[in-house]
Image (cartoon, rainbow, N blue to C red):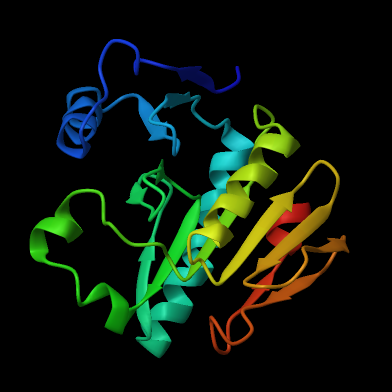
Length: 192
């Protein structure tokens, strides 16, 4: 199953509150919204991808609990990006000082902020071109560092502000660089 894009714009352009209500009224469906206002219905992940997403997320949570530098988010969190898109990366992280400027209502709904870091782990239903476009959209909307992990090809694409995409073949570890100080992801949990 692949993602389905539906364009309701000729009939109705959903406001942010209406999109939020659509998502809340359909909790078993994962929605995203692109910069054009089109609704994207995302298929659920399979067992292998879901397991690896959780394992990767756990490493981020443990690191973040130790450093207390920011706030971690899982794939069910939808962010309102500066270009108007609503996106849900598999893992996201925001520096604490940036998160703390949001109001309680902004934090409760779909936070109007681009994460500092995002990670997308491709599942069998994802296409490389669409996922690469999503990664570029994150970078174009103020995300500082992004990792696209492609298990099938055993590749990682690293996206950084103002730099070309770096492609690594079967890396064993990834460094969080300056964005995630001291964080290292052991990719054995992804490749095995």
